[in-house]
Amino acid sequence: MHTRPFRHLHRMPAPVRRKPLVLAAALSLALVVAGAAGATPAGLGPPDPQSPNASGIDDLYWVLVAVTGVIFVIVEGALVAFAVRFRSRGRGREVEGPQIRGHTRLELIWTVIPVLILAGIASFVFSKLPGIKDVPAASAGQSRLRVKVEGHQFYWEFKYPNGVVQVNRMRVPTGRPVVLEITSPDVDHSWWVPALGGKFDAIPGRTNHTWFKVRRPGTYPGQCGEFCGIQHAAMLTSVQALPAAEFDRWFTSEEDAQKAGTSSLGSMTFHGACATCHGDKGQGFIGPRLDLNPITADARALATVIRNGRNKMPAVGKTWDKQQLDATIAYLKKRFAPKGVSSGG
Ligand code: CUA
Image (tube, rainbow, N blue to C red):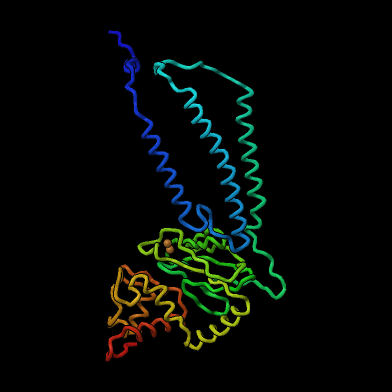
């Protein structure tokens, strides 16, 4: 028996009330874009760059936004204009338009123009890359500062050449190139302080390098950019840039204090590393409570847990030196140990 294919096409389609739907969609899109644009001071853009490499990234961002924005408006404008201009006007859905094959000039134009656009973008990117990648040469009296950056579950540890250790907050001088050596002793993390350049993974067994040279004193926030476990979202960091003389004063006095065991390293490590899981007051959170926990009086047991981890607790202190371990144990004992329990260490 002969059946007609696509029979349904020959039925007259029911008219659809599209106008309210289109209006609602357009309105919600406008609201979403306006909300996102107003959400941060920089709107949809990256934060105000504070280092030459971040400025390079910022320039690339805005040029790409401009080029793709113009293309978007042209393409979507044409799409809407054609949809309106060539709407059906009651013509049957099965009626086909003229079938045109081969138009050499048109095909050349739509090939050559995109090639030129892409070539333009590529050369702009390559012209900016050296300024983003290459560490500026150190000038006289302005040597580079090298800082080892370790991403840990769930905090950032910074180690300076003179032995100073900092947790979560990195202190640096302004106007001097700071070279970061980024690694991790446990799982993948990602170093990301948007105002000071790009994002670099902290990978076990490998060292990634980046740098910045901060223009103005201030505190620039960052966040671990790679999902690394249950407290990934709490893995915040900041870079605090001080005027060079002020930094130097702090740097030498902190070195002395950490060597003498009189610094706030224990407190800094507790608030940066331990408190993330055990609570700000040691009251317990996703980790057990530390307040009045007998282990805080037992230095040897604490050292073992901190170095090796236990159950769900990561080996937070695997890479700590003796100063940091002692300072942290002393802080935990002083703050949380039940009174009248003797130290097992
Ligand atoms: Cu560390 Cu996410």
